[in-house]
Image (cartoon, rainbow, N blue to C red; front, side):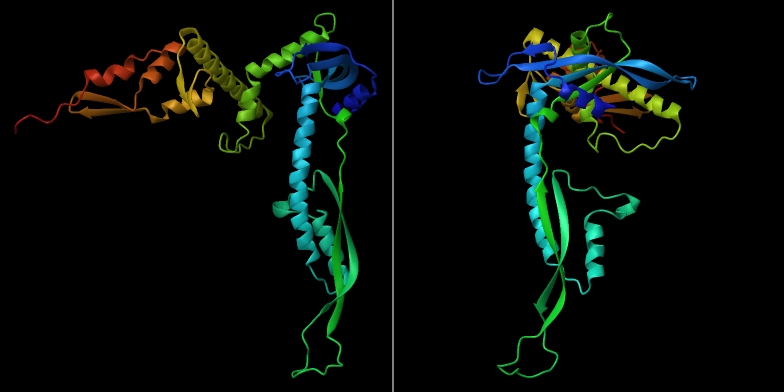
Length: 336
């Protein structure tokens, strides 16, 4: 459906202008978002299991800024893949096969026509078309008989096969980049195309950046869920957690800007820390509770003034941090 709508958008001569913003520098062209709504009949499954064909509204948007970013990303990826293919071609060319059937089997493996590791199909090259061809060749071998050969004897050779690698870079037409398709059930009378686009862009200040952050393998370990209700529950908890993550970042930045304060960041002091930086600052804070007889002893280690500043920004009670002063451990001065 998305590819069909993108192809439809490319066929339009000029899409209506939805949003235009100036470039970040004087040399940059204005960032333009052009788009238009289109209705398509799709199958919609309701919570009770009913599947009904209904008209769904899709807003097809083309972004000049996104197109520029995708073009640069494609060029960079193609250059890196070309370097990897050069090493791959050298490795393939050094392979020697005694019969043509072995060479064809090697081509099937290189073209990922078989099963990869753990039963998963290997990923083919993304930015190039790679073709393999079998050619007959000869190579020198060791003499079978011992002793010095006569000067008139030709060098011993054997017949076999090698593989030749042919590369072709895949084109990346500029008109294919920068497309986004937004699906909504809101009618055009209730919300215009520009408002739909604006509502989508505002998500980047709430949950959307968090999804990019949790793609790190160290952030969330693989979770295998089979039941739809468990998948829905995990999705809800993830979204709620990312909302809290965004609120923490927003409130801390607003407090720092209001009171002209700074926090330690990854590269020195900053007024715009991310929520990850804010949470990482508390990694060195430790609360130790001990019971000595009937007396409770509480000690807090690693506490810095910026930790109390974050508590003030988030409206959190930091009185428990001060508990260590009330229950300070005395040196064992009691005489036996």
